[in-house]
Length: 514
Image (cartoon, rainbow, N blue to C red; front, top):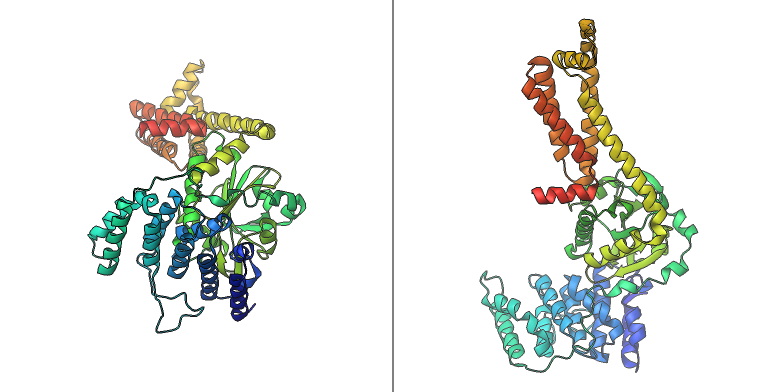
């Protein structure tokens, strides 16, 4: 659809009596009207729709889109349109002030002049305005409902860093006075609206999408390995986030992956955390090759392991887009607009919870993952996981202990022989053959400790092993010293014990010591 036809359609809706449903649908990123449009065109089109709510009134059903622009957009035109639309909401709510304050912080250094009198900006501008001006005007409209903004507004009004213009500082001062002088009783019968308003938008997807489509999705991970999505989820509850590396809005994709890394760190502290998979899939399958995805994740705190991986879809994003009904649109192969979205899948790959728009509420997300991981449906998987962890724990202790208890010097070897009543020192010549095997065994043990350290994001057992091994080799073979040898063996023993501890016990012990 050409922009001229789109503008004509919106103008027709503005002249109708009840255009709310149609206008709201035009704000969905996946709408066909945005297909193959430039990012600037998408901004114009969405701003024109948002301003329509200022003219016709803002229903509660469209609040989610207004809140999203205020909390995550850095486009001054869209923020201004959203601020205007908010002034025509059905009722005032204290939470609105929080979103306006976020918008002010996001856009205060990216502001610009524009006008809503025309679809295209025509110079000189008639009735020009700015995003900051409209945000402050909406705060004035909120009055007493915006009192939570006062501390931040007073700090901005002080303008200690001299980064705001005198005109803006004056407008902030006027806003403060109006809010302070408004003693209207605050009515909030509905309570605060959750910051993640889109939490239930996609619950119906599990009814629409079958397991067959889920099993057809093929992904390539950050290491270049290709497999089906269900192979990576491995029958576990899974959190799926979406991003792309060329996203130029730090409040969207970059923040999404940073928050995903925070969720990963929290899950690593939980006993049930290993039974949950965390995945991030790029919208941009053609540009986001495996090495780009890997660098993007590492730079934002992701620790890659079997429970946390990042992907691009192959051969393209279409099947993933259809299965999740993603809120994204493209100009050719380039993303021109997308929503913040995450989904929780059950062990069969069905979507059981969707989070769209607004901010990532990590506590809420982790709560849902916990309930799924500990649910009765997962009892068998938990039992199997416990058996596997127990086996790993036993082997991680026995192998290092076996290596540790091997005689590591002529003195130790003689002591071992005498301990078992063997006085034949003729066995001593074979010690030189044990030494290379011992070094290899130590190297294997260090590598195993390194792999565990990557998963735990802690290498303390590895450090103990390296120091202990160095002491044993040095003072057991080259400069025999009994006391030093005992110290080295003790460090190896502590390394084995710490490595064998359950993950949550190890982290709790580490936090107490630290």
